[in-house]
Amino acid sequence: MADDPPSHLAHVPLPSNPGGLVSDDAPPVPIYIITEASQLPVEFLEPSPETKLVIGFDCEGVDLCRYGTLCIMQIAFPDAIYLVDAIEGGDMLIEACKPALESRYITKVIHDCKRDSEALYFQFGIKLHNVMDTQIAYTLIEEQDGRPKGPDDYISFVSLLADPRYCGISYLEKEEVRVLLRQDPKFWKYRPLSDLMIRAAADDVRFLLYIYHKMMEKLNAQSLWNLAVRGELYCRCFCINDENLAEWPALPSIPDDLPVDTEAPEEEILSVLDVPPGKMGRVIGKKGASILAIKESCNAEILIGGSKGPPDKVFIIGPVKQVRKAEAMIRGRMLDM
Image 1 (tube, rainbow, N blue to C red):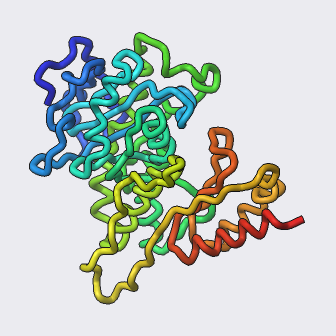
Image 2 (tube, rainbow, N blue to C red; image 1 turned 180 degrees about the horizontal axis):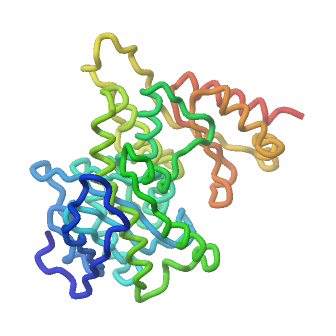
């Protein structure tokens, strides 16, 4: 890995041992706290088609979105975890990671990429690309097995870790960190990093590669295409700007090698609706009843910026016909008196 590991190397014990992931006598995976780009593996900093990589990825910060503060990027390799310290390393360190985060030769395994991607884009101009989002993958596998999800029924990372099909471990420490974040939203900004901060940050990526391999075994050809497309759409979902996403990479095309007995998939798109001032309440409805009814009527993801924003837009992701149906229903709500 890195030729010159940083001197402040922390060894953090695994929170549990999912069957077959590590042996009982295996040493803890080392954790490197990175403040300079030279401490990162060369194959990460210089993406190449000859050395394609799959890494676990996550971000921590204060109110992580376009206006928040990115504090740490976690990168998991099979034999090491790197905590890229954006506070100590500054913009130069994060910008050194841009080629890897935008590369099609490095697959970034992440759970729910939307806000992380938004923060990277607006704070550093990074267009997160080629992600494998485990939240999306979980939904696709459930649909394959005849268990379609309901509106807003998204698997949390803690629940995914607990699922014996993918990892089968409990992550009780996550709740401890959530309590601390509620008490002090600047938790991730403090330096030096405490043992709890190092352990919590590492645990958010520690098992992502294991989960990735478990999920890839289950996904069929069409689901793999859906996963790739939705990952790209989720990455750019909250990154709307005046250029209307024209600068982002093209979406994966529908593959030609799908099984002949498979119904041809429909193109999937992202639509962004502007909501006039004072009309968002009509779209959402009392206790969310209106937007829930629309979600139940359409086979599309409908997202609202909420407290992190943008507050005047509705984001719709899904097959073209379902997106157009959702658009019409939302516009109708805005006209209702």
